[in-house]
Length: 189
Image 1 (cartoon, rainbow, N blue to C red):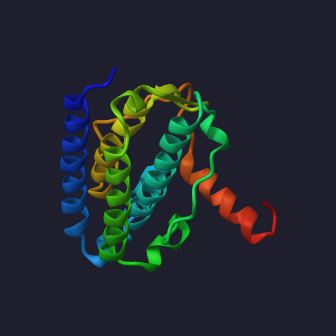
Image 2 (tube, rainbow, N blue to C red):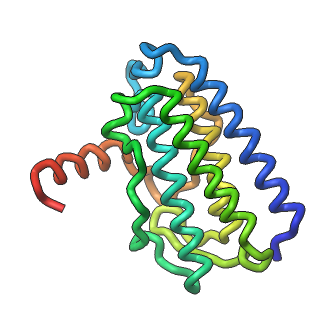
């Protein structure tokens, strides 16, 4: 069973990695926040603003997955839909770093409240993803600080030392997002 110490460590790491992300993003000029690295692939082709919007969307999604795991026995999270965020990726470049950081701050406050409301045995509940496999709530929540670390490096134009453990090949989230937006704009769901 998860321990109070593990939950405290989770929250500490979440705070540390989020602070590093904020420091990386806050230091960007408006021009740098729109820069796309040369020869980048996948998510690394996103601007820093798009990286921040991606984190905002994924925090909302991960919160939805955790809530599903707390409600159901080992749900398939590929069917769980989260509410849209205030600044989606496709509109990120029309916003400022400060606006995105404020949205991330509000979303994180919700996440921390969610964590504080989970009884210790709730951290052992599971949810399954076709991309990541079956993880406990604690493992899903650890993804928050790892994801922040990955994208903080990308915001700074560096390769991250953290790579998610995908089942199979890493999905091209940037391409999937562009395809989704194109379908929406053409009137197809």
